[in-house]
Length: 316
Image (cartoon, rainbow, N blue to C red; front, side, top):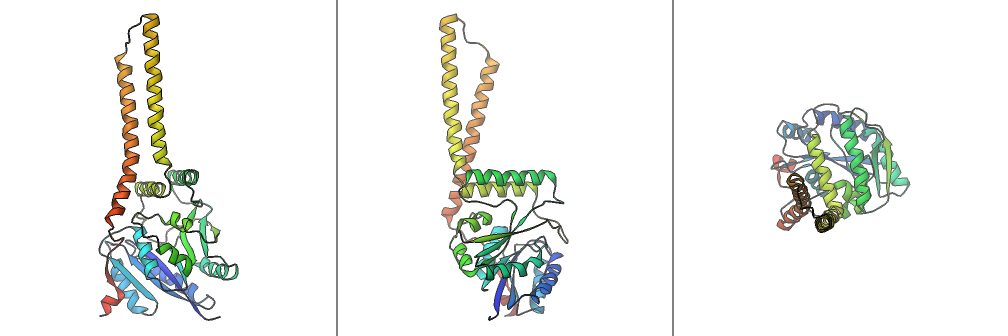
């Protein structure tokens, strides 16, 4: 078998401490791979620390394998993933986090599985969330249950971005040039035969995560909006239900007044009723506005990312 290349896409944001550790760990696994070599594609997503300098030094040290892309500003992890996939040239492409929460030792098994069992993709999923705050674990499990109920695209609970894909699958993903991206959904939407390998949660080797609870919450909302229209139908249902309820209550008031000669009273309850309806209306408008905002961004046709520097520009 001729030697094949695995492109490893690694988004980085303020990861100056973890990059050398990640590279060292992957180099140990690289020499164990059967008829395969590694191409590193680090994507610096507008880091504020010395991440870019670390990547420059690493690229000079290993010119044949280490490539990097540096954005003009922070465009987000999704943009980093897409840029890495666009610049990957390998026969297979892997996506990994630089903090080593994605076990490098699984790469060999993933490669053997994709070769021998004729899968298009070998992904990974966590079977435990040890070390993660309980509130984050609860909302994560709730998100997966919710999105799989309201979306036709299945998203595996605990699935990570860490996966090894064939060139054919990567090319299919790159045809989806939408600005608002949710990779976990896109990986599933394009289809292709996928097998998931399970592992227990790993802690970061260094540094701090840039994903706060609020940023994860917004990311989950983006995933729901990107792969389900149910919230729009839900907003319509709430509007219809509120209208029917108001008509029934109005009819009850009219009948009570005619039969019992009881004038309508109770301003406090009326105010509460008006505020409740107003809140529902604003809630539904928020749902519609979320979809409309995403549509607005798509119609602008702005680039998903802008590259300021690569290892090629620094050597010229």
